[in-house]
Structure formats: structure tokens, C-alpha cells
Amino acid sequence: MRRIAILGSTGSIGRSTLSVAETYPDRFQIVALAAGANLDAAFEQACRWRPRVVSLAAENDAEILSSRLKKEGSGEIEVVYGAAGTVRAATHGEVDFVVSAIVGVAGLKATYEAVRAGKIVGLANKECLVAAGELITAEARKQGKPLLPIDSEHNAVHQCLRGGRMEEVERIWLTASGGPFLNRPRSQFAAITVEEALNHPTWRMGKRITIDSATLMNKGFEVIEACRLFHMPPQKVEVIVHPQSTIHSMVEFVDGSILAQFSVTDMRLPILYALTYPERIQSDMRFSVGDLRHLDFGPPDMNKFPCLHLAYQAAEAGGAKTVALNAADEVAVAAFLEGSIRFDEIPRVIEDVLSATNSGKLESIEKVLEADAEARRYAQKRVAKLRVTSTSFV
Ligand SMILES: NC(=O)c1ccc[n+]([C@@H]2O[C@H](COP(=O)([O-])OP(=O)(O)OC[C@H]3O[C@@H](n4cnc5c(N)ncnc54)[C@H](OP(=O)(O)O)[C@@H]3O)[C@@H](O)[C@H]2O)c1
Image (cartoon, rainbow, N blue to C red; front, top):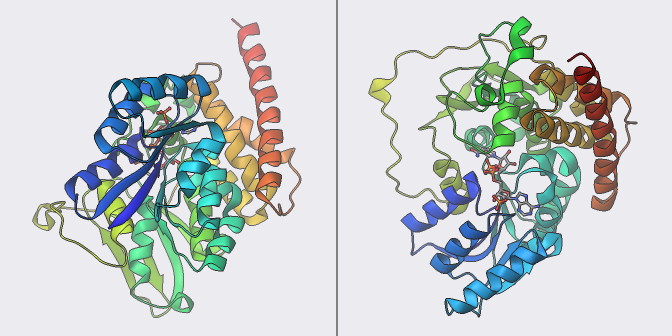
């Protein structure tokens, strides 16, 4: 029986994880849930799963949740809040597996503490590895515990790597759907609306990752994630556009053999793989090979999607640059979603923040969080300046 904590239980990955747990009640027990602001969903999940502990982002929400649970006769569930509450959920003594699926750097501290507490971590949150991958992977090695990727591409790579030894790997191929604007000319990017950008062709996901998929920053993050998870230099991690998203990624070995993983586009499959690793268990998520017609592949256009180029640059520099990359993107995407900047201004904000950031190794999570805060402040200033410039022309 796996005893699970889900960080980000009310989100897309969190709900898919609960759906997997629902399908295999004899295998998985939900011990801890951590969510942000969705009080009603957290309440429903707590009533359904009866975990030992539930965490919410804000103290006030936690108080309301606690009294609602008492009224329901579930007063024994511990309710906590804030960053410390998420850490409490991630490190609870009865938990042995943590699904890290909070969006953004908000999930970093708890993910790191889970690894430090010797938990096995299933990683959906790629921002943790982008900002602090060196620290997290070093700690996992020290603990002798695996970090299991839930992100579909890295999960695919993890599966393919079981076909050879690390020293036999020539390169990793990360496939990219290309997002909704693969065939739209760059000259039209300034007019892209939030609704258009949120309409991903193959995956249904949270808002941040959907926008990141449209700018290809998501693929850039995945390059960094792959470098850190599989200890590869950036030049050995290649992105290839594959609009059907059928092949989730590939590993090329030194003898020229390429192993690819494909399956249905359903996040419950990589979640199940991580939760049951190193076993594989029966599921009904079948891919119809007979229906496969054609698969297209092509190189990404880094001029049209500068975020991918910026991510490769940050991956080469490492340390503070990748922290700044993630922080600037988080601020820029939020600004785009609230209508403050245009779609084509997202990479401009990130590029400016990267230029203003000194490269350098960050020795602790506290240093990472300081660098993150600094990059965020700078990004906010850039966004504010763009806002002024665009309104002054109205
Ligand atoms: N969705 C996918 O298919 C997919 C695939 C690969 C990787 N990922 C990665 O997985 C992560 C989650 O993605 P998602 O699509 O599931 O995002 P999402 O649907 O937006 O969910 C985000 C989750 O994080 C929680 N959260 C946000 N801020 C928080 C805070 N300060 N404290 C505690 N919890 C907080 C949210 O809680 P509330 O809703 O309660 O506010 C929600 O449960 C991201 O890093 C993403 O890049 C996602």
C-alpha cells in the first residue's frame, strides 16, 4: 500500500492522481492533501478521502475548512495552512510517496523537504527542478530515493532509459506538440488573445502550463528538467515538434537505436507509472495502434518562439539564471492572463530579467527563494513599464 501526499490536490494533476487512487483502492491510501485557494474542492476531497492532514494557502480559509469539517463529523482531520502547512503535508510521518503538483515555485520548499525527509517524490511540478534542480537531485541521491517524473515527456524518457545504461545514451529527444500557434505567423502574435492561448490542441491542463505551452517556454523548462533529472548537458537534450503528441519522448543510444514511448494522452498513465514504479500494473488506458496513421516531426522555430531559445541559454548558465527564467515567466504569464501585457511581450519581459541577472550557483533553497524574489521584483517593474507604454498609446 502506497501512502500518498498530494501537493496541489485541487489542480489538474492532483485530481488525476485522486482518480488513479479511486481506481486502485487496495493499492493507494491518501494521507495528506495540500491545496491553494479552492476551499470547496479541498472540503469535498477531505470528506471523500479522510486524510490525516489538509493544508490550504491562507489561514482564514483553513479556519473555515476546519469548522466545516467539524460540522461534518470529521474534526479529527488536522487542518494547516501556508508554506509551513504544505511542508507539514509533504513530510507527514505516515506518508511514503509525495506527488508534487503545486504550480510554480510555491511548491518548491515542500518538495525539497519531502526529499530531505526520505519520501519518494513523483514530480509533476517542473518549476521546482528549473529553479532548484541541482539541490533537489543532490538531496535525492543522498537519501538514496528515486525522483520519479510525472511530466509526460520525462516519464517517457524514464521508461526508455530502462532499455540501456546512462553511459550508452547519445541524446534525449523531447517531443513538443508545438502548441496552438505552431502554424500562425509571428507577425500575428501581438493580437493573440487569452482565450486563444488557453486552447491547447492536445492536453487539458492548468492555465500557467497552457500558456507556457503556447510560448514553448514549457518545452524550455522541460529541457532544463531533463538535464537535471537525467544528468545530461543541454546540447544533448533536443526538442522536436510532433503535433500529434503521440510519441511522448525518445532516447537515442550510442549504437543508433532510438527507443520511443507512446500511449494515450492521459496524465493518469504517467501518474500510475510513478506511483507503482518499479512495477507495472494492469490499466484500461489502451492506445489503439491500429488507428495510428501518420506521425509528423520537425524542428522548432526558435525565432518565432524565443522562449525556447532563452531557456537553452539559461540551462547553459544554470544557477541564478534558471531561477530568474522561471520567476520572470511566472510574472509575465500572470500579467498576460490579466490582460496587462500582450502575448508577444512575454519573452521580452523574460529576456530583460535574464540580462539583469548575474549567473552564479545557489547553495541553498533559501538562496534560491531570495533570487526568485529578486527576479520577480524586476519582472514586475518590466511589466509595469510595458503597461505604461501600451496605455500611453491608447
Ligand atoms: N496538467 C498537466 O497535464 C501537467 C503536465 C505536466 C506537468 N504539469 C505540472 O504540474 C504542476 C501542476 O499543474 P496543473 O496543470 O495541475 O496546475 P493547476 O491545475 O493550476 O493546479 C495547481 C495546483 O496548485 C495549487 N496551488 C497554487 N498555489 C498554491 C499555494 N500557494 N499553496 C498550495 N497550493 C497551491 C492549486 O490550488 P487551488 O486550485 O486550490 O488554488 C492547485 O491545486 C505544474 O508545475 C505543471 O507545470 C502539469
